[in-house]
Image (cartoon, rainbow, N blue to C red; front, side, top):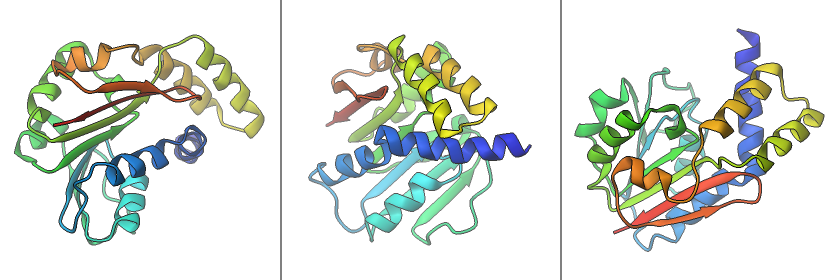
Amino acid sequence: HPDAVRSRADLRLINRLMGNYRWFERVLEGSGRLRSGFRVVEIGAGDGFLAKRLCRRFPGLRYDAVDLAPAPEDLPAACHWHQADLFEVLPALRGDALIANLFLHHFDDQSLRRIGTAIEPFPLLAFNEPWRRSRFHWAGYALRVLGINRVTRHDLHISINAGFRERELPILLGLRGGDVSGSLLGGYRWLRKK
């Protein structure tokens, strides 16, 4: 549907405004492990925008992107796309880092625990999710001036309500350690380095 296609463009705009793409770049740069052949697994890769951006930003990166959607057309050669159910493919994937952007808030508690069990071995975990705070609904309303469509406006508020606070995400994943931080425009970020 045209509104759903437009919503993808809106989501890229929201990610830029929130600084989400830059945050993932800083995480990888600051990992102290980034080298040729460094392997990143992204779950919930969506339209592949983050995968393409990171592969172009860091030549030599090996990238596995997982989503139910088909691979985008202009995917870099370093990126291997897995069009599959997350729970079927994730146990077989390994790498140096696992990332997810605005994805984990779609899962119930039991599914999050299953994901946590599968991803525990990854040395670096970096997740950006909606921060569940009422003040970010106001930011969502303010985005109307930028022309975001009705699908995006609807989904934005549902996502905020499904987001995370404090240490909820690592607890639900069944994982210890890591640091929780928040961004000015509503990003809930959890980073764990082993």
